[in-house]
Image (tube, rainbow, N blue to C red; front, side):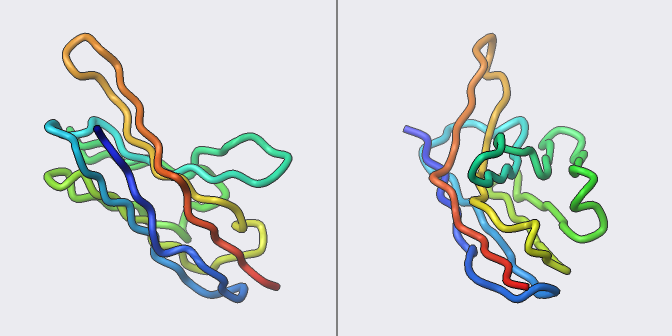
Length: 120
């Protein structure tokens, strides 16, 4: 059974930094894409950043460009999110996601989330 476990969340002042980690277990194949999402009460879960294993391409939502950096260890199916210059608008629960195709079957896995709180 595949499991994703996030860590690294916490409370930080505006302008500070946090580094989130997501470690996977139970997978016998390399995930096509690993991503970070965040969720704020009352709003839809938002895609923050993605990292593909094939070509190494990364993407970011506009609001975090230049401040957040996603990186991954494709062999270990581990992904990180370095978050700098944090603002209160970055507060939320951050979820790790892994998705892709295995043969003809699609898959998607989620972690339980890690809380990030940015105080003003």
